[in-house]
Amino acid sequence: MRITLGVTGGVAAYKAAELVRRLQQEGFSVQVVMTPGAREFVTPLTFAALSGQKVITDLFAEASGGEANLDSAIEHIAVAQRTDLLVVAPATADILAKFARGIADDFLTTLYLATTAPVVLAPAMNVNMWNHAATQQNVETLRARGAKVVSPDEGYLACGMTGPGRLAGQEEIIAAVREALHAQRDLEGETVLVTAGPTCEDLDPVRYLTNRSSGKMGYAVAEAAARRGAKVLLVSGPTSLEAPAGVERVSVRTAEEMHRAVTGRFAECSIAILAAAVADYRPMEKQPQKIKRSKASLTVQLEPTRDILADVAKVKGERLVVGFAAETDHVAENARKKLTAKNSDLIVANDVTTEGAGFDLDTNVVTLFARDGRDLPLPRMMKTEAAQRILDEVVRLRSVLRAKPMAHGSGD
Image 1 (cartoon, rainbow, N blue to C red):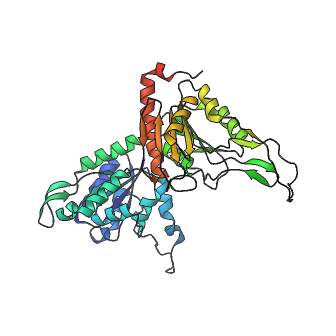
Image 2 (image 1 turned 45 degrees about the vertical axis):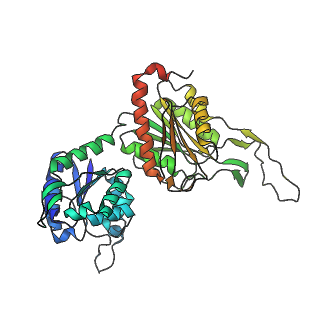
Image 3 (image 1 turned 90 degrees about the vertical axis):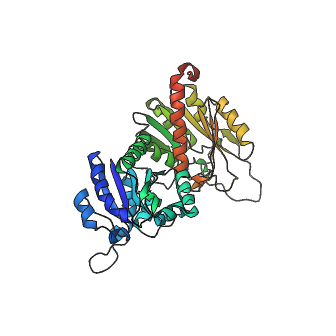
């Protein structure tokens, strides 16, 4: 397991050296990222010697000749993709504010925005800075986004004041690390089948019917499931997105191809999350040649495609099946109907006309409707965050349904 340890510019920076040792004793590989302020308190050489790895200090390190190094400029993406957990200790008031506001002006802040790994923050600062309303608001913002904040200890501070602000003890930080990683490995042993993206239904050799789905939601779910320990099969319609690391992608184009791919691999999975925006209708006939423009009106006859969600839910057995519902009105009513009619365990529904929700956006606003009667509305959040919340509900439902196998049923 790889941990990235962010060290920021506070007196407590020296304590991060011992934290590296403790994390290594826990069996983690640790790479240190230092802010410019941190280097005023501890040298990068100290952390390089302790971790045995390169210490990253600059977003734009210079190559030979004094020019910007392109490899360094994109390194934050590589580090973001390979890290399993981001820990920042000490976390200053400045870094908390930047994280909360999405400011990316150095390697650590840019890495924070680029990673989908869980985040543990251990603040340390002057007592008045910690108690300030701005800092407390930033902390709450970060907690709401899923970061685990290890509150500072109380005591005598370097500035001579007494109160909360001291970096939490190493055992508290290590406990938070264990908790964060345990939560993110709760799908170990599961095989999750995810569908994503649109389908394209051909009208003639140059035209087709499709929708505005970008695949971002489904890809976020696939990546999050893989990070949480699952084996992931991603059946994807046409999209420009790259398959997440460690995920097996099966590329399809039409609703029929997606149906065959899903039903053909369904027996391998224990959880199916069908996030794709599959066409409900397709042209009854594909014209062999391009339809020429004319002044006459054109009528295209459509026929329904096969219902992937309903078909797999009929034979799900003890598998857990999640469907998605993109609605424009009566969201709760339609989602509940779909939950029952399709024999699903969970429906993720949204009103695509809501600001910040819908297709081809990085954010979403969804409500989760569960088989056991629980409705969970979520505020607008990044799709990467929504994916984690969806999987949290999947894990909860899995425990409930496995505890009561007769309530789950086979769906036959």
